[in-house]
Length: 268
Image (cartoon, rainbow, N blue to C red; front, side, top):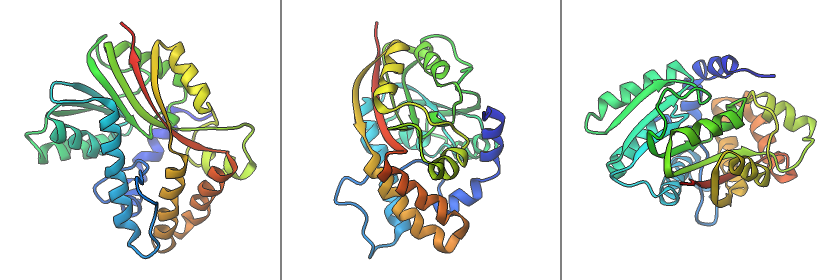
């Protein structure tokens, strides 16, 4: 069983590597490809950055965040998306992350954008340091699979949301179990997480936490396309990641892993 300390240590020590492969600005979530998909004739780095921003825009549209919103970004990482959200909409964003290294990066980014209404704190999703009903929206990207007690984290999201507030997030899902040995080794063990819920099972967990699911979007093909580009990137930058990144593509094809987006409402 993995722990929060394991996850914190992992991300404290791998930020430079991830920036070199994923996005130099620090965005570390998956990409969205509203058109046909990846283009083998184009620079994979440029395609990745565009896909990351396309997913930001799509999740923003689904969340309903606007200028007067108060937003909690769970798993804010380097603060890239939190600052983007604040500048894009004028809303107020509070970001939390387990990694002190990444929270420190986020605070430096905040200093570079003094007009953005953002604040960052080192905190666990299992113990959010905020009062009840503190936020109109909770936002999270590619984070909750790292949380080793997701039902407790969902209860915390419910607690800090206003009545009628929105929880918009994406996460890895496990369409079927048991997963293959290769998926266990190269995906779940590498990312320090356990195979967990299918998309339907996730929706049931959310409902059990008092969060009414209003929309579910299967993004598994977009996860696959993200890793198609990443495989091209790591061949030159970090060849030791070629095998696990290709394994992600194979696991999506086999149904051992998927990616879904959920939009939820806290019932009044």
